Image (cartoon, rainbow, N blue to C red; front, side, top):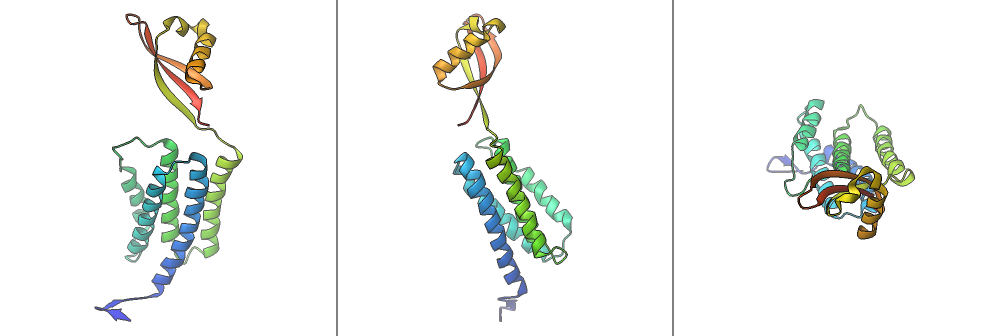
Length: 199
């Protein structure tokens, strides 16, 4: 069937639908199960899903023009220069963004030289790798916070324990490390960077 000399359905429609279902399944495992369950950040869910959908359909559409793998690498370059000017993106979120783009590109550009089993295994390996790192190894996310401290006597190396105890008592945080920045002896203040794990 055609409409205005444009076919309504062809074999690629069913291929696209099936691959999109595979892509959506593995993306949901990565974004909703692995990322969100660990970080509880809803602000990136929309970004990850929409970028992955756009990349998938963009790659699948451009593949009809029989472009080579350079097109896929060019997409990575395009998304690499995108800068969200509102907030700086953490390295973890950037990694997840790279993962969802990579998975979408892989699932959309796979051709007859790559079997369905290879596609599923490749996706499964990615999900399994993230699951091991996030769920099994339980890597903690260390957060840094810059504060202005007024008791400059405690910033001496010999008073490190006093400084740490004082900061933990004031902030209620379990501090891993403290770095001393600018010191203002006129105002008796120092800029400190404290490091602690996100619970």
